[in-house]
Length: 414
Image (tube, rainbow, N blue to C red; front, top):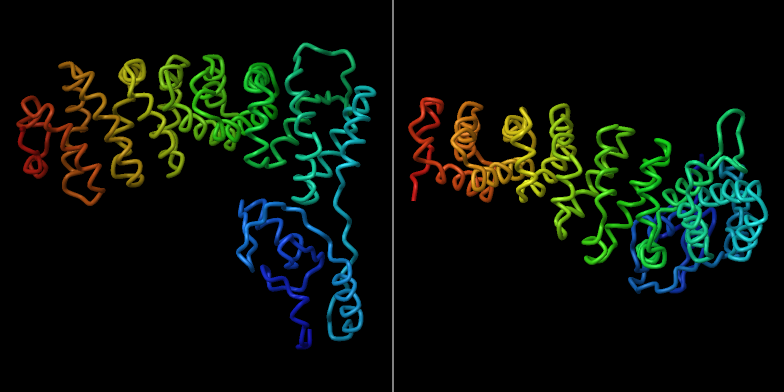
């Protein structure tokens, strides 16, 4: 393409490229739709990139005059290699969404057609997603999830030989809508039983619906208030652990671990996690995990659960519990070091029977803690390691299980 001067007002201030679908924000600045949508919706920014003013209303007004000028300029300069810009498809309107939702009530077939159309609309752009949010689509989709009945066969439609389940379709759309914080909070408050409904989906749903359910739960519970987190039911934790045990997908496992990290500190949730059988499942995951972030998240959950007696008991009852926690020290990251040493501190403080202390010696855990004091792994981690060693200095300090080159690091008991 020959070098040619492009009028500066054709250029998007974000992408610095010629705009294909110029839209104007309430501050009066025009951007390319794709760029400003990504800035406002995906990046969760609230200020105009140029003026830095807060944009209270994210309504994007198409700048048709500028678009026609750009299209005309492109056609006039086609001989210079400038490609023609097609007229963009207009975004969906609230009236169209409302009409679609009303049609869904006519029959199961209309409901499936509505869900498929909503999925297509949401996939087009972020503006459509926000329009769906403000037009009642989220409440409509949540109602389908709330009415989930795994035993229902009447009115079930089939795609060739596969049943089309409205719940699967609704969860897919809800997940891909990438709901705003306001919509997630609204979903929690207006649909009080949504967590129970999603738990029911996780109990009896397909692998795909279970994966979508746990991802949606993660997003919702990150926005929940403390009282909602304290009141979570035992059944939810049982299903979260089952998702981890079944390993239905890497994405589902990641979402489940992150969810456990966020909810475990609240109320009796750490006890509920332990009673749901999470500790042996987490240990098994840690045994076969080599990814840095996965190890850090698993150790974070174990650290939280080991702050209760039930969690510590489960860790000690697993033959590889102490060994794998110790093995991750100095092999993953500073975060993993800190979490692993804190787990060992919890065990040393509250479960220090003679058998446990001897096992920690024989497994090389004490030697590992001495090594922590010799290398660079963070002040807090070193202080925790020192605390563990001081607690049981009389039993461990002169043990032949500690190599002589590490014994000099052993801190004196206070």
